[in-house]
Image 1: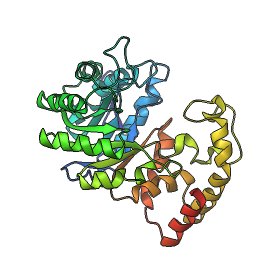
Image 2 (image 1 turned 180 degrees about the vertical axis):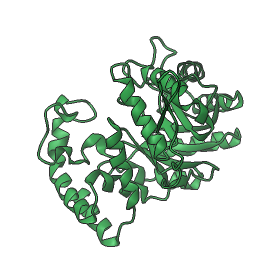
Image 3 (image 1 turned 90 degrees about the vertical axis):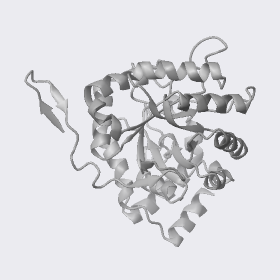
Image 4 (image 1 turned 30 degrees about the horizontal axis):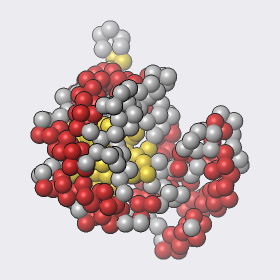
Length: 337
């Protein structure tokens, strides 16, 4: 929703009914409720993108009851630009709603040159979050993640840094991303001893990438930690985009490392069969793929990206039909196994 001030500039006024339709799920054993769908700023929010489009997406998200915005230090391109653009949008539109938002950022991947701009040292994590807060114009984030395991830094150092970040008031909660089950268990033990609220594990999870089912979801449940799933549509494979091949200009056509022609070609048969099942359910394939992840009790939220407000609205419709029959789950498992 928008109103015009005396200068004619359109100011943002959030939809008063924004909490009426969204589903909210408890995150592990914490007090935090997350929207079943969250918005990620990995793509479409860098300096190479149109900031007004990103602004429209975030306005639409919040109007739909999506309160969780997910960033990382190196989202862009270039690195840091998604946070900076978010900071600009936040100042213009969302500052009055800060206490209604659950904002996340992360550090763990390459961010700046030299030995202190990567992985999991105390030096890197604390410096990175300070930079992130400055770019976003925030006093704190709601959750700060270590973005990936660091095999060479003691886990005690990394978790100790997260603990001190909470004690300094720079984050309310902490999480990890891309950790396996065993490392997650060790991290949970350390953070419990440090009395730090470890509430989220952000993991890649889709019908085509089910590694979290091999122990991680059980580990999270046993430790009172929630899961938030990223790449639920397998970088676009679980949509109607590739039903008839690889379109020009698509991610797969560009042969990117996370999605290439070979991967799509190997899975087109499965995608087509899943699409038929989705149609029988009265859903788009993308909506069914999101609903399928949310059937897991450990999953608090599914993290989606969007290139437009309309695409986001279509994805949110997944929440209209989350139930699966035993027969449907059997059919899906037969297709994707």
